[in-house]
Amino acid sequence: MGFLSRLFGKKDPEPTAEPPPPPKEETTPSWQQGSGVPQELAATEVREMLESAGPPVLLDVRSPEERQRDGWIPGSQHIPMPEIQGRTDELDPKRPLVLYDNTGMQSMEAGAFLLEQGFADVSNLNGGLQSWSGPLEGAEKEQ
Image 1: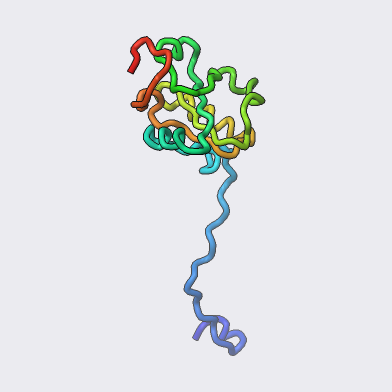
Image 2: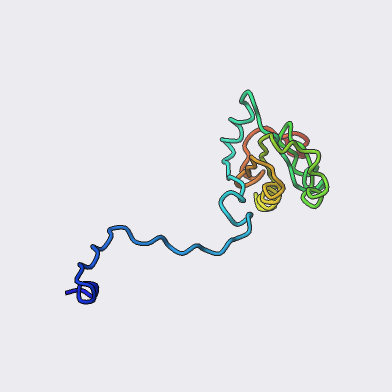
C-alpha cells in the first residue's frame, strides 16, 4: 500500500511517462548562442550565392595590407576588422552579409558583432580567402 492510500484511503497516482522538464539554464551572451554565431558557408556555396539574382554583400574584414598583397573577391566591400564598430552605418542590416578574411577567424568575430548589432543575416566564408578558388582582383599572384 502506498503512502497516500495509508493516509487517506486513496490510491497513489500512476507515475507519468514523461519526465519533468529540465531546469532552465543560465542565460548566455547572444554571441555564444546559436543565433548569435554567423552561419559557416563553404566557398562553393558563396560562389552560388554571388551568381544568384539576389546576391549577398560580400565584406572583406582584412587589413589594407593583406587586401593589397593577396587580392580580394570581386565586388567585395572592404571594412577592416578594427573599423567595423564605427562603420556599421555603411551596411544595410536587412541585406544578407557574407564576411571573409584570410582564414575565417576574424570574420567570424566580426560577424558575431554584427549579429549583436541587429544585422539579421550574417554568414562567414569557412576557411576565409584560403578556401576561395574563384577569381580574385588585385592579387600580386592572379589566379
